[in-house]
Length: 142
Length: 81
Image (cartoon, rainbow over all chains, first blue to last red):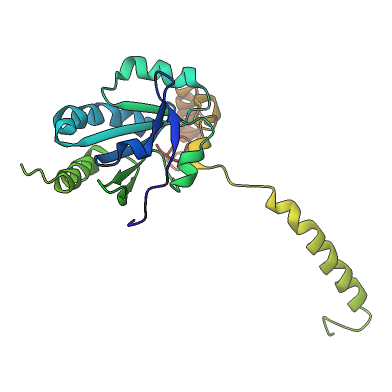
């Protein structure tokens, strides 16, 4: 926390590269997920909601998939239908760089590209707290 | 009896050298990272992937022992459930 977010360049759904540097200026919710991880799957409807409600306020969600096989991820994405950005890192270079210890792990990167918060795991009870934190960082009050 | 007697020293030295030589072999065993547990999370990697069969077995066991519970642990092996 407080450290600059490690840079990366990963292919997205359209195979075009997604560069973290190009997202600086937005509040980034970086999520590491896999299709085989139950809580990760649960977090998708929540992230969809987050994107739909706070996307206009400057929140950018980037969900990095760490499945070894892209086809496993695609099968899940077909039912989850994310409205936010998805990237693929089967080699697991980014979770290593971000020191991921549990699945899923989410990292909040502030507008200057500095890691503001990090959360391990996903539960609906904790999700409300994370959302409040995001709203605080965005400067949105409800 | 002293543990380290003078005629034990060569043997101790040999053991120390052998241990030191074998130690690097342990370093090749790296723990599985959280994002690499896809295979471990597969249903067939659990002890009771056939829920119905294990329920029967558990019921039989509980009847025989006249006690229930204490079988298995929570979680699916992927470290996330």
